Length: 146
Image 1: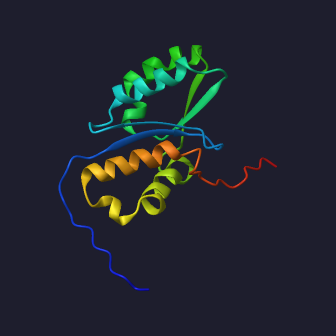
Image 2 (image 1 turned 180 degrees about the vertical axis):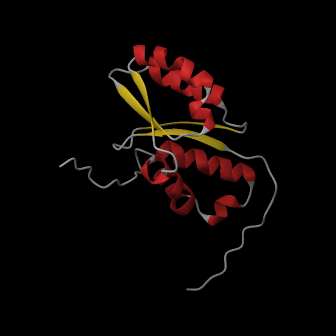
């Protein structure tokens, strides 16, 4: 059973993912080969805010792209559409449910052979992300308030 797995190292373009995940596995995501900056985050939250049918709270960590002046300036507009931002305490990735999805993506849903070439990896990542909420689900423990 002990088997060495070798994945050749190659410097290449990166794929960055921004995702919003609910405990019911509703998943919205966007990918880019560019750096995810505040403007990218604003664009994602803008798109989400225009499609809301009920009040929605988005939980974010304290990354600079989430707490920038530009993001803070948009909060009033989003709140008018029913989108509210809640920031997790500093250094608390264990409270951020999207981290579970990224761990599943890297540890279970992608296979070593998916890393053989950049194009194949990008393709597999997109296939996996599109399957979240359908064929692929994150199993959360039951949330109990009392």
